[in-house]
Image 1: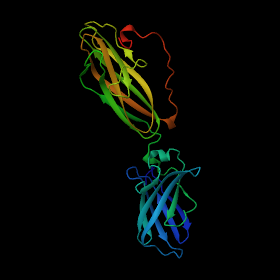
Image 2: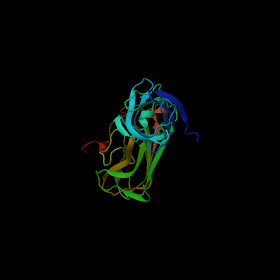
Image 3: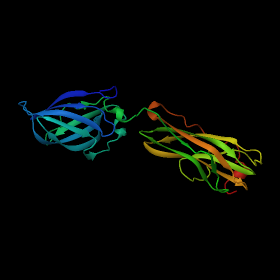
Length: 281
């Protein structure tokens, strides 16, 4: 058993039955439990038995519950918590976000065993609740800005996170043109979005031939919930040229809320919108 998995044994009594359970973490299939069931005389039980497994927080509030049927052979059984018939809640990393979870075990029509089993830290290797993550996207060679006044998705990255937190996104590339164009760049979490006048940057105004390969880069922070999200570096332009971005790259880094608050930054108007980028122009 490695450092991320910890066995937990606890004897609990129930009218007619005594159960000895062990728990450990298993990321793919849930949390496996093995135990030994005997009658009050200490004789091992054989056959099938219905179990109800319930997870509680420290305030005794139900987080998740499921029904299982186990096959008992000479008193021995095993069950995968998280794979039974759901009674209430959802078995996912959010259940263990508080790091203070108790397991209640009920056999058949009998009352739930007492005391509940305190899981402690044994199941938390399934979640990476406090681990950051990273995703990147890169396009080799150039991406054309397809049409004046239209949005082009230059490059994107998808990141899946296990819990609430923040995603910091950084995008960069070399802007290139052979004539006259005024490009605008912005980072969005929606493909083909309209120009974001609160978060865009202008690479250049009326750049002329010879002003090729100008560095364009941006960054932005998003507050996120558990799940997958995709981030896009986008652009549009005004003018008659057909510019492009060379070797664009985007990086999304996840910071779990458990690691601390990320300041999204105060935003305020610093001046008028440049005339060539005003809405409707």
